[in-house]
Image (cartoon, rainbow, N blue to C red):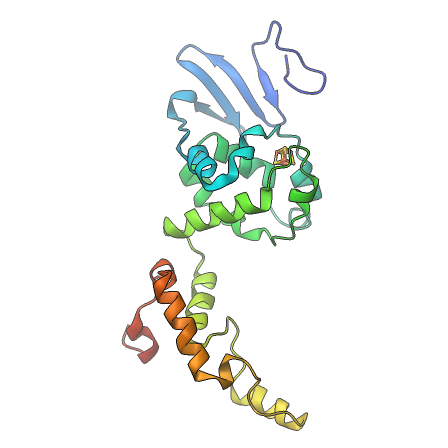
Length: 214
Ligand code: SF4
């Protein structure tokens, strides 16, 4: 018996939400997700509660319709499945969600948020999970490198090397663009904000790293 557009709860012994099933279990409820059985006693609500406190309370109204996954341009090309991550988050599979590299394949285009029939800010939920993922130490090495570049230069992708300066000069431009590269004071301000917000700690940046001491 299935919960779904055509389903009812009568005589149910298996409840299905797309690929997530609830099976009555002598120790409680057993969830089936990604073809795995997960005993209900191992499932916590802490992650969903954190999300609720962060203003993402609508996530609890998710009906697992899959519109987010079906609309996702990233999901068309990668293993990123929005609905599945939301479901796992609601089931409290904290470590599994936060350590999932697919979490980083969202391009934050916002299509899921626009189309979600339950008006859940799905993109914001994914960003929140990414923040928790970083705090838990699961930041991707590539993202860490980019963050370190931002701290050191004010640019995620610095464009002050010889190659770019030469091209700019050939085009009749100044060697450096009118960005932080040209304004050392602005870089100091950025670094001040980064310290105040503890972003440097989050991305594990060590002052001495830029001098090649670590
Ligand atoms: Fe849940 Fe909204 Fe995604 Fe449907 S579109 S699965 S309701 S988050």
